[in-house]
Image (spheres, rainbow, N blue to C red):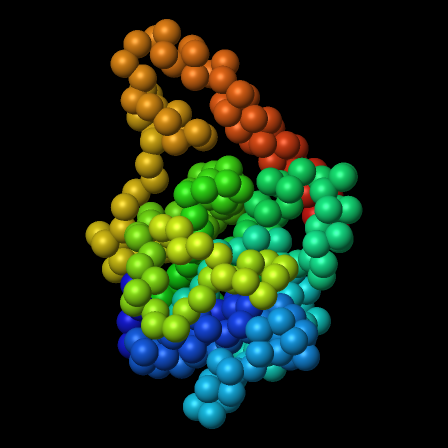
Amino acid sequence: MIIKKEWRILTVGDGDLSFSNALLSHQPAALTATVYDSFATMSEKYGDHFQQQLSAKEIPLIFGFDLTNPKTWKGLQKNSFDVVIFQFPLLPAFRSFSEYQERGKDVNFNTLNRRLLRRFLINSFKHFLDPDGQQLCFITSKDVKPYREWNIENSLHVQTDINYLGSIDFDITNFPGYKIRNVERDKFVKDTKGTTYVWSSKKQHDLSDALQGALYLDDDLCTLCRAGPFVRQEDRLNHNQSKRHTQMMEFERLWKEDLKYYAENPGK
C-alpha cells in the first residue's frame, strides 16, 4: 500500500482502530477514522487501547459509522479527503452472525459483499473525496475464499465513471501494531497475504506506474477463476466444466441480475 504524507485519509470500518493508529507512523496530513460498531460495542469486543492513543493525538473518530447510511455520517466533513481506505471488508453491515445467516437465505453472500464494496466506491467518490484532491479509493483484500470470489478488479465499478487503476501488495509489517480482526469475534485473522486494489475518478493517476494492472485478462486465461494459461483447447474446456468455474459463472450471473435490478429501481 502506498501512503503519502500530504494525503488526507479517511478509514472506513476500522474494527479496533489498530489500522488507523498504525497509519500515523506514515504521518498523513490528516486522518479521520470510522468504526461500524458503537464505542461501547467496540470496547467490549476489543478494548479501547487504540482509541485512547488516537484520541490523545486528537484524531477525529466516528463510531456507529455505516457507509451505506448517510444519517451515520454526522461529524464528517463532505468531500474533504484524498484517500478513503477499507481494510479487509466482509459484510460489516450486519450486527450479528445470526443476521448474516438470515439475510443469506434470500441473497447470495457473494452478491451481498459486492453490493457493500460497490456502495463504498460510489459513496466515497460522491460524498467523501475532494474533487480537487487525489481522488483515490483503496480496498485491501485477500486471495482466499470468500474474498477471491468477488471479482474485485472487474465487477465493482461497472456502469459507473469510476476507474480501476491496479493493485499493489499489502505489507502488514509497514503498519506496526495493526491486527486484522474477524468480523464477529475478538480474534485475529491469520496474516494471509493481502492486496490493495485502487480506484480513481481519474483515468490516469500519479500512482498508476506503481500499480499492477488487472490480471488474467489474456485469451488463454480465466479471468473469473484466476486460472491458466491453458495450453490446449481441451484444458480450457475441462476448466469451463469444473465446479469452480461453474460456481464463479453463477456468482457473475447473480451479480449482473443485482446490478440490473438496482439500475431499474434506483430508489431501492
